[in-house]
Image 1 (tube, rainbow, N blue to C red):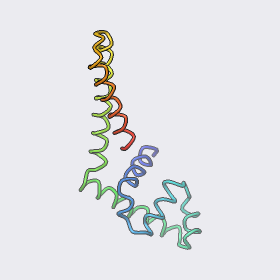
Image 2: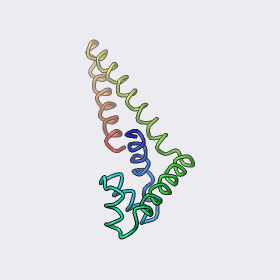
Image 3: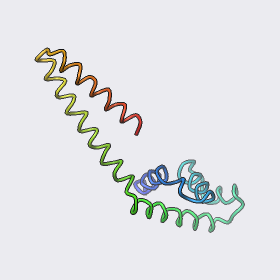
Length: 122
């Protein structure tokens, strides 16, 4: 159950703006603000069943977007590769300190800074 909440939450972060305004609001209240179906229904003046149906349709749309565009999958793959790259740079940095080559030390520090910048912007 927790895995699905996280997965749909991630899909919502990537594709939420592609939903209709109503779907977006319902999904935001449910997944981001943790409202119950009844609370959402009360807030939007719709039935609990309408909230449930909107959530199910919206989830389906989010999965369709991901199946077509694969942005979340690509993001996760890139994130893993960047993390691996950071480890390699750290290993090179450690070796560079042993050789005391200032150019290699400087360049590995630049690489590390670029990697962290990419991670922050992701």
